[in-house]
Image 1 (cartoon, rainbow, N blue to C red):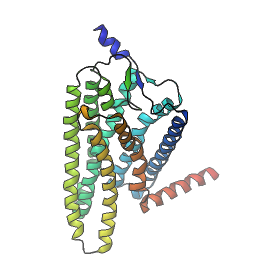
Image 2: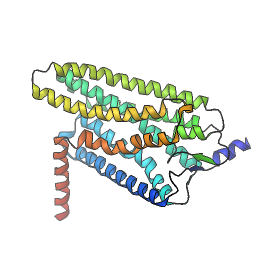
Image 3: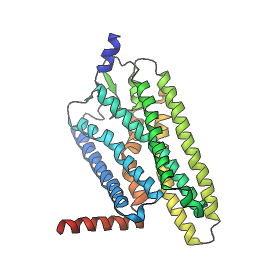
Image 4: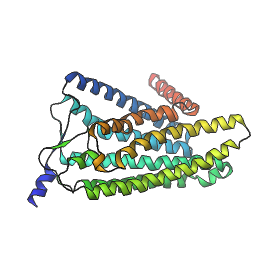
Length: 314
C-alpha cells in the first residue's frame, strides 16, 4: 500500500524533442502563434454567434460548441507545453497530469460526438427541410449537445481512472509534450491490459458509432443533393457539407490513429506529430475551414467589431 502511495505522488517528466536551445525557442514561438490564432479565430466565432440574432440557429449553436471545444483542447495542453520548452523544469505533478489527461480526453471525445451530431443536423436540413424546425427544436439541440458533453466526460472518467491505477517505476518519463493515454501506458511498469482494452472498446464504440452516424447521414445528404434541380442549390449544399467533411476527416483520422490501436505499436516520434495535428493544428484550422469563410459569420463578426469600436469611441 505504501508503494502505491509513493507511485501516486511521484511527478512525471516530459522528454525534450531536442537539446538544442534554438529548436526549443522555434517550437515555443511556433506553438504560441498557433495557439493565439486558435484563440482569436474561435473567439471571433463565439462572439459573432452570441451577438447576432440571425445566427441563433441549430447549425450555429453546434458550431459555437465546436469553437468552445477548439479553445478548450489546446488550452489544456499548450500553456504547460510552452513552459516546458523554455524552462529547465520538465516535470508535471501527479494531480496536474490527472487533470490534464481528463480534460484532454473529455474534449476529444466530446468533439468526436459533436461532429456526428452536426452531420445529423445537416442531414435533417438538406433531406427534410420542411420538417427541420419541428425536428431541430431549441430543446432538442440542447439535449443533443448536453448528451455529447456528458458522454465525453463519462468516457474520460473511465480512461483516466484506469490509466492512474497503473504503476510507474523509477523516473516516470513521458515521451510527449503533455499527459496522454499512449505515452502514459508506455511509461508504466505494470500490465496495461485493462486501459488498453478500454481504449479499444470505448474508443471503438464511440468513434465507430459517431463515424457510422456521419457516414449514413452523408449517404442520404449526397443522394438528395444530386437530385436537386438547381445548380446553385447543389453548389451551396456541397459547400456547407464539404467544410464539415474536411473537419471530420482531419479530426477522426488523427484521433483514431492515436487511440484505437494496441500499445505495442506506440511510436513516440510518430505520436508527437499526430497529436500535434488533432490537439493544436486542427483547432486552429476549424474556424478557417468551417466558419470564417461563411458570409453570414463574416457579416456578423464585422457588425460585432464595429459596434465594439463605436462603443469605445463613444
